[in-house]
Every structure is written in C-alpha cells, then in structure tokens.
Length: 261
Image 1 (cartoon, helix red, strand yellow):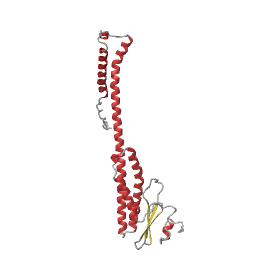
Image 2 (cartoon, helix red, strand yellow):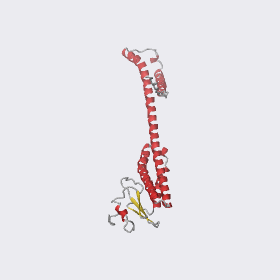
Image 3 (cartoon, helix red, strand yellow):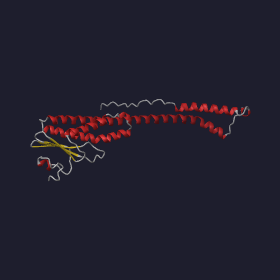
C-alpha cells in the first residue's frame, strides 16, 4: 500500500510491512512487531454510534520513543488512551443500579456491551504486545491497566444485568400477588352474589314488601336511617372483600421413587 493511502502518518519512519498490513480501516485491535518496531492498532472508546469505530495507532520505535495518530478523536499517547477508558468505566461504576428503573438499566446494558467488547480486545492486544516485547516494563504496566479496565467494565455490565433481572422478578412477583388478590376478591363477591341473588330475584318477582308501619312515621327519618345502615354494611362488605387474602401454599413436587424393575 502506498504511503499516501496509508492510515499511518507519512512522517513515521516505520517498516513498510506495517503499512501493507493495514487496509482502508483500522480493523480489529491488535499488536504488530517487526525489527524492534511495535505498532498498536487500537480503537477509541465506543460512541453513541457503535458502528463507527475510530482507529488509534501507537508506534514504539526500537529506541523506546512513542508516536500516536488517530483517524477519529485525537489521542496523543497510549497513557491518555487508557485514561479515557478508565474515566468512562469509573463514571459508569459510580452509578447505583438499584436506583434506576428498567428503561435506564436497559440503556446502561446497551452502552456497556460495546465497552466490554472494546476493553476485552484492548487487553488482548496489549497482552499480545507484552508477549512480543517481553522486556518492556512500560508495556507490562499498560497491559495491567487494560486488564483492570476490562474487569471493571465486565463487573458493571454483570451488575446491570443482575439488577435488571431482579427488577423484572420483583415486578412479576408483585403482579402475581395483585392478580391473586383480585381473584380472591372476585371469588368472595361471587359468593355473596350467589347467596343474595335468589332472594332478591324472588322478592322482585312476587313483589314481596314487608309493611312495618315505619313508612309513614317520622318521615324521612326511617329512610335516612336505612340509607345510613346500608352504607355502613357496604363498608363492612368492602373491607371483607378487599381484605388481604392468605398466601397460597407453596407448590411441592414429589418425585416418584424409581422402580426396581
């Protein structure tokens, strides 16, 4: 590949094999070594558009001098590159998953998934660089930082997943309890209706009307007393129907003993 079309700066005095092994995009994160030169091909932290990945290139010459270049957001050193990941993971780690609702937890998981992949591949690339440059203490330190980034990202991702599952289980349990309570209340109401429905129906058909003489005495006090008693009885029945139902017994499954033959 010509220098003009290379993703690497033309001013870099690097082996041509590095330019030849790079295409029009950065590709996967990896490390390459040739004649004492080390080239790290890394990705910047994931953005909102996960399909767009900016390539970052870090070249270490045989004398230990570093140079950096990027196709997206500028990054001037490998230390700054790792610091970006550390800051992003620390911001996510400071959140309290239990204080978030299901929508916020889903958004966290969606944002963490590409971060976990990027940090895992970052650690893999630096681990490979460590194996290729076994005598470099600097690469060892960067590899360890990448491992810590990967670990924190995975823990945050797992915490968000666990909290989302716990939230869903709580909601399902609450809905099941509410459904059971409504079923018990409906059953109680049906029992009352079944008990009084024949009496009310027969009384209406045959025009049953018990005359007590109170109809004409001190009107409308008897009527108001009847209304008051009815309201009190209604509240009593409401309390009975809406009272908390006893919890159903836990379902147990009995395993049949294996037959002898």
